[in-house]
Image 1: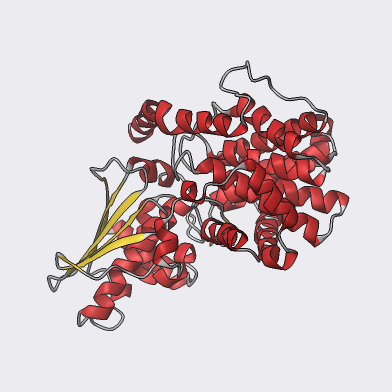
Image 2: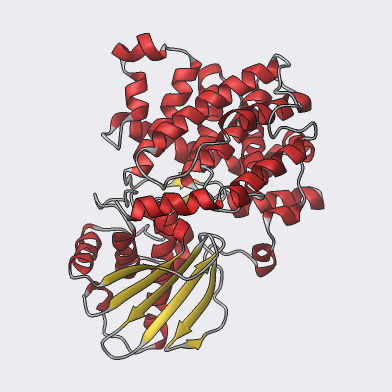
Length: 441
């Protein structure tokens, strides 16, 4: 393995990891869990105090965290929102689990968490911050102690902890990364589409075989969504026999169904983890499931699939670097662009065709907005998969949206930057308006 290959693998491991539940409420649970652990470690607390209602939680969040946490199902609870997520983080959360902070969920923990919410022991408010991803979790105890943990910029990035107003030493990263790795942004890796494709083609299979865990986790979610009664049942409905006159029985309907079903389950509170991408479980699902569906439908080796998944993941990570973790642009746009590239690769495409697939996607569904994480996300996911396959097929035919059209440029990197500018700068007012509408309903 070369030094550059090791660096790119470092980025993949940083941005592709299991997540149990929607990552915005999970990030809130993580911050609360860390604040509770500070009290456990540094104050003489009564044994079992976390299972009582003798403390209060005060959580401040950025607008995008609020938007993405309001309507999404919380694993195992049958409830939605940040209040129950925060309560679960207090009762049973372990920060060492990272984005799987609620791994030790139990019936007793759920019942106690519901009591905390019912007794109004959990307060959620909007933080005074310009950051897109920011959470400040404060725990107040009857004995007068307070603890605090702050998460910012990444869903599992705990940047500050306090006890009774005094700042503690910088906490260890919850997912176990080194400080130098955490301080690097995606753009610091200076990736290009060309290098990503060369890496996916040439890196030793044994060095990227870990990416096949994406198949294990996300396919399990898809199967759960197909067989269970989750959310809007988008994936299940696409596969119903009496709907085949509408959707057909081809690869497109198969890929749409599997991907949407995984989103159905995840958004409705399924207790299975997703393999996330760039801090988003839905993005991880969308970036992988169309590629996995192709592998299942047409038969590919594990090595072919792993290389396609690495390409798909890295393209999404690369594009997301220009947008930030949260924005008004639906993550499905970026994730399905990644999967379009993975499909081009599995169909024998070259660099020019991968670039064409990206341009076709950016010229097609760039305007899809994010109005929060919710059950309806499965419909957007299905739309993204449809666009991905369309873009991949056209690209393999040598068809590409012209550089004279809209925000498309001849240079693929400039085209990606244009998308980033629209999502991170141009749609800021849209983001604020969406949040205003949501909180005033």
